[in-house]
Image (cartoon, rainbow, N blue to C red):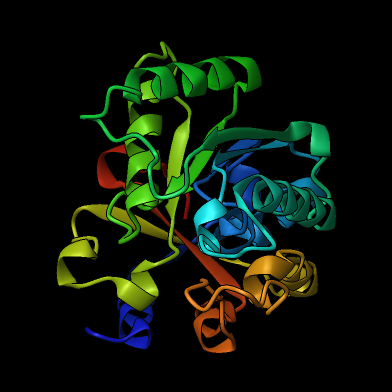
Length: 254
């Protein structure tokens, strides 16, 4: 199961349909600006169509996508990426007032053994208390990117402090491209849900395209720059989004 296609086939074979009405008001956790559009942009658009509230927490500042750009030093790049994130949310009909920027250092989001972890957990806990989502959408716990795993750890710790826990659905980003066998969910570990997004594909694709610094050569003076190439974006071309949920928390939705 080395290719993204093989991984997708494996998960799709286990997937069950779920309607966004079973998600309700949601808090989306995006480790970097663009993860919200790539991983669950279609679902966000569908939630908004049905009148549900969506809040989005951008965890890191995204400034390590172009770490050596003379024309876009970290502060300028942070501003660009936040502006792109707000443009993407507008495409998905999410009020910009519902965006929260945590501004953790890109590639250095605190993990459980970090001194800053407790402060990050407290930040997310306050956001959960304020927004009171029915469901939290967070990256898959074993996503190969360290910031995605760290974001899951922070959210998991914050959720454990609540008296009433929202539902948690985990979305997939780098599993397709970089994941290995150990990163995949076990058959009995997670329930796989599938949301059809055919009706909002154009809207979702416009949200991805709003992240111009990531999907184009807008910043062309850093040879080490990260770039979401058309080949990478092929992993997000299917008219569905997959989510994983702990089997013990399975809802009777079929």
